[in-house]
Image (cartoon, rainbow, N blue to C red; front, side, top):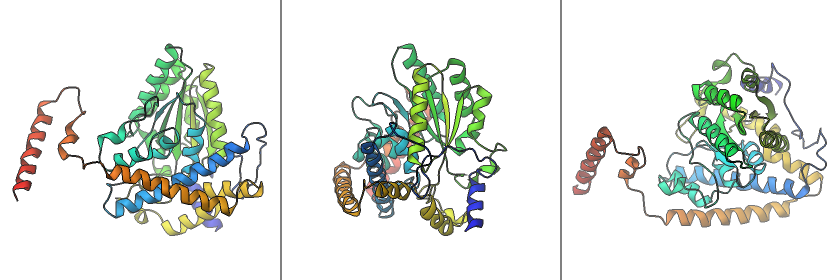
Length: 370
C-alpha cells in the first residue's frame, strides 16, 4: 500500500513539495479550525451536492454505454474540487468550464437537462439559465482562460463586484494560452481565479513528462500573482481557498492561481481506455479507500451527528428521481440535425464551410433514398 501511495503521489508531483493546504484529513478529522468560516448547513449542502453530482455522473456514463448519449467526459473523484469551488462563488460571478466541469456548472445554476442535451449534441445544451453567467463548455484546451481574464477586466472597468473563474486541467498549463492569460491578468490585476484540477494526467500523459516544475501553483510567482496548492479532495480546503481568491480579486489585489490536487477515477472520456497507461483497478481501490472526497466528508459529518444512513437513502432516492425527470425532458427533444454542426462557427459562413455543408447535405440525401 505504501508503494502504491508513493506511485500516486509521484503522478501528482506531491512527493517533492509537501506544502499543500488541507483542512479535512482522509479520516474525516479537522486539522485547522473552521469555526465561523463554514457553518453546518453549508457542510451538509456540500455533501448533498457531491452526492447529486456523483449520481448524475454515473448515470451519464451508463447512458453513453446504452447509446442514449454521445461520448461523455466523467468527473468522478473530482466532486470536491468542483462543488467546493462553485459554492464559493456568488450568483453573478462568471464561470468558464471545460468539457469536464459540468458538475461545477450544475452547482452554479446550470439545469441538469441542459447538461444532458449538451452530451446529446443539442445546441440548447450550451445555453445557461436567464441571469446566470456560465459559458458553454470549452473543448479546445486553455482557450477559455484568456476569455475569463477579459471578462474579469470588463467587470472591473464597469464597477461590478464580480469575479471570473476558469477551470482547466494540468494539461492546459502546457498551452500558450495559459501563460498569456496569467501574464495579462497579472499586469491588469484582474479579478480572475485560475482553477486547475491537477489529476496527474493529461489524457495519458503523466505530469512529470509535461513539465519540470514540481507544482503548477509555483508558476504564479513568474507573473507576480498569488498561487496556492490545495488538497482537491478536501472540500473545506477548496471552498476556503476559492473564497479567499474571490475576496482578493474584489479588493483589487489581483488574480489567483489555485492548483487543486485531485484524481479522476475513470477514463478521460468514455472513448478512452485508462488501463493502457495506468493500473486502473489498484489505483481506483486505493483512492476510494483513502482519498475519496465524498467518503471523507461523510466520515466527518457522521462524527458530528450531521448525517446518517437514513438521510443518505432519502437523498439518493430524491436525486435519482430528479435526474430521471431531467433525462425525460432531454430525451423528449427531437434529435439534432447533423447540419446544425455548421451553425455558429463563424459570424459569416466561409467558402470552405459552405462546401462542407453542401457535401454533407448530399450524403444525407443519398442516405434517405436508401
